[in-house]
Length: 142
Image 1 (cartoon, rainbow, N blue to C red):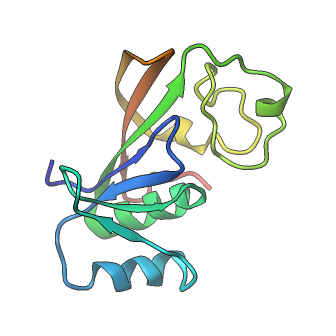
Image 2: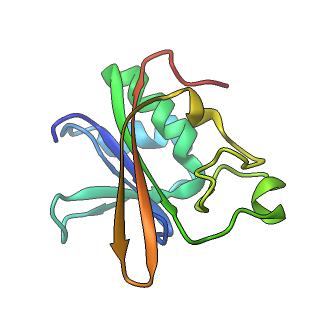
């Protein structure tokens, strides 16, 4: 995929991100996300990717869609993790449970993104659902 993409895995501690090559990509990430971030370029996997702390999902998605016009976002959720009070009163946007963010207290801004696909996979002991969104410039809700 040549278009920029961001992936938030269910059991990953960091976002995975890819954008078209540029010699200033690291500096751009710092400009958009702050000087204190620690983006890591992981070229030991295919495709090679940037790895960034999860709390930057909204800011990163907004910045990528503004820079490139659109960004593909894949959010992974558990099909077996029950939505409960912890999810519904959360303050961040890191929902991974079976409600797929619909009842999440801290961030359902992605409900305004264009959903282009959903697929279920069984990986290990946890069933997972991946939601594939396309976020276009100006389509990131506040």
